[in-house]
Image (cartoon, rainbow, N blue to C red; front, side, top):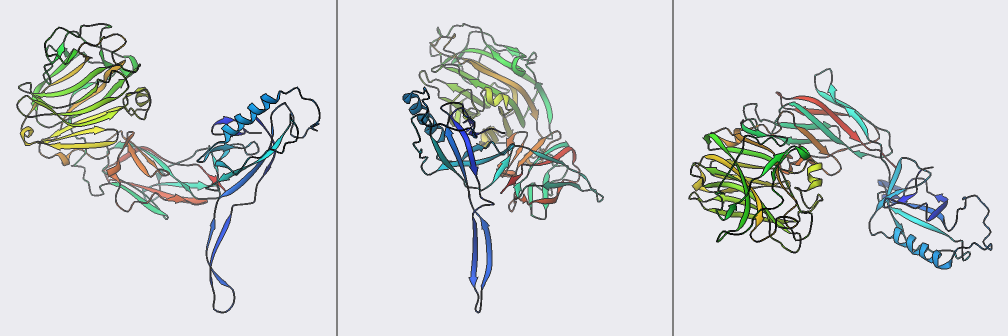
Length: 516
C-alpha cells in the first residue's frame, strides 16, 4: 500500500482509509448542433474534473479497515482528545487551492486536489466515527513522479531526433535539456504538433555572443592577483580602516573581514571597511563582467555595504553595483546600479529593494541562490551604453559622457556603516565569488558573442513555457509564434535544429505521464 498524504502531510496517524470510490473516467461534456431532419451533429467532446470519495475512520485507536468495530465498547479515549483530533483533521483538510494528494491504492501516482463540501461525521460513538471526504480534482488527472527520458541522436538524414513514448492516457508537456559542445545562435524544436524557436535563425558564426578576451578570471576564491587598496574612489567617504581576505570555502569568496575594526574617527565618513583592487595592464573601452554575489543577513537589524566598481585612467567611476543595508531594525536592503558622470562623480541610476534573507526568492544572493546556482550577475559597457543584470532582467542606460572612457582599475569594497559595531551587527555574508572580466569586440556590441556559447546548458520547461540558459531565464530569446506543444499518448518524433556550426554534447526530452 502506498501513502495517504495531503499537502505533503501523512494522514495515516489521523485517518484510517476504509474505502475509496472512483468513477470510470471523468465528467464528460458533449457539444452538439441539431440537424434538420433527425439526430444531432456532434461538435465536441470534452472531459472535465474528477471526484474521488474516500471513506475514512478517525484514527482514535489502531483498527484494521476490515476489523469488526464494537462502537459501544469503552475505548479509554478522552473526549477532549477526540475533539482535538477532529480539529487537527479539519486543519489538515483546509485548502483554497489544489494540493498534492496521494492515495494508498495507487502507488507512484498523485492528484492535485482539494476537499469539496462539508466533511460530516456520522456520530457513531463517543470514541469511533466515520466520514466520507470528497476530493475535487480540477484537472481530472492522475500524475506520476516518474520522469521518462528520451535521448536525441542523428537520424539517417543527419537531423537530431528523439522518439517520445507517452504511455499515459492524456497529452503531456515536454521539457528539454541541451548541452552545447560548440556555440549556437538558434535553437528549434519541431514536431507534427507545433514548433519552438529561440534566438536568431540567421545568426552567423562571425557574430558570436560572448566572443571576447578574458583579461582576469578569479575562481574558487583565488584573488591572489588583487591588491589592498588605500582609497575607495567611487566614494571617498567610504573609509579604509582594515583589510579583507579571500578563501576557498563555499566555492571561494572574497570579502572576509576581521571580527572587529573601527567605524569611527573620520569627519564626514559614510562607511568603514576594506578595498581590494585589480589594475588592468591596458585600458579597455568595451568590457563585460560576470560574477557571483553573496549578501545575506543572519540577524534582523544587521547593516553593511558591498560595492564593485570599474574605474577609468583617472580613477573616476565608469560603472558599478552596490548592495547596501542601512536598515537597523528590519531586513530591507537595496541594490544600486552606479554610473559615473565623466568627472569623478558617482550617481545611482536605479535602486531595487529586496530582502537579503537565506531563501530564494526573495534573495538571489542568499544561501539558497548560491546552492541553486542563481547568484550570478553581469555588467556590460559598450560605447556609451551600460547594462546591468538583476534577477532575470536587464537594465540598460546610456550616457554620452562615458562613450570614450576606458577602464583601468576594478575595486571591491566591503564594510560597515559609520558608528555601527562590526561583530553581531554587521551583515553576516558579504562576498564576491567567481569573477571574470572580459574585453569585448571593440567595433560593434551586437557582433559578439553567439547567443548560446560553447558549454552552455539550455533548459526548456514545457509546462511553464520558458527557456533558461545556464540557469538564467531568457525571456527575450523566444521567437514570436513559438508553441510549447504537448505530445499525446503514443509515439511522437521530435527534432532538434541548431545553427549549422553548432554541436551538442547531449540533448534529452523528458515527460511525466498523466492518466484519466
